[in-house]
Length: 269
Image 1 (tube, rainbow, N blue to C red):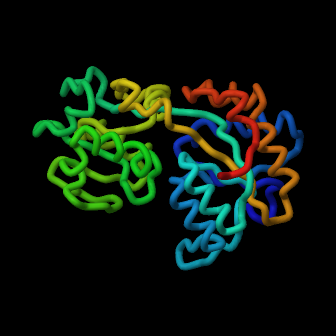
Image 2 (image 1 turned 30 degrees about the vertical axis):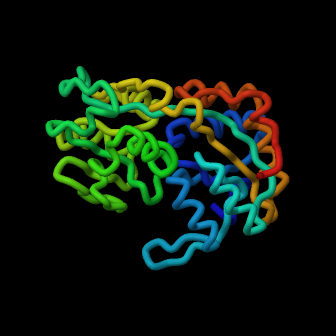
């Protein structure tokens, strides 16, 4: 990827199901452009950037992306302090829901229900999954449910209580656990619930009020790294994200379009 692609994207993982359409739309505007793509929790991606690459199976894979996107502006501010980024834009929005089995057999109606003794939860972990780090935990704490779920633990792929599991990759594990009957509900992005239903999985979403869905706060921020030989193509990708074609490609999967002002590149504060 680092050697052959004309632009390398490291993006917050919860948009993985939209990326075929998004990349095709980019390539339509830039015929022949080859794109390298990794979609993972943004905290893991940031850690790899800070280390200059990945270690997988005991082998080091050096390299940085040309474009990085997170669900938290603080990640981009860290890159700015390291001299790796200077400008950003917000390119879309999302909201949190509670995923349940089709028909909602436990009659989960809101965040308070995650504290019920008969409700087992599958929650994104608070270590590197942005949905919990920056949004879900805030809501659970405000509703008095955080300690009930976490029991003082911050871990990955772990059973924190008899009723709660913290996932490693929530957008894959939570529907699987619900369908397997090992969990009853869990926080996911609305777009992930829509995608699971599109795949024919017997799940549905319990919509939350704005103060719990965080729909007015959840923002996807993107930047081009200031190091590397592909900055021109990275700039073209950021320009593409502000286009009607890019916004339509994301909206098709349930993402909320950003405003023209948000799509304008500006200095990272």
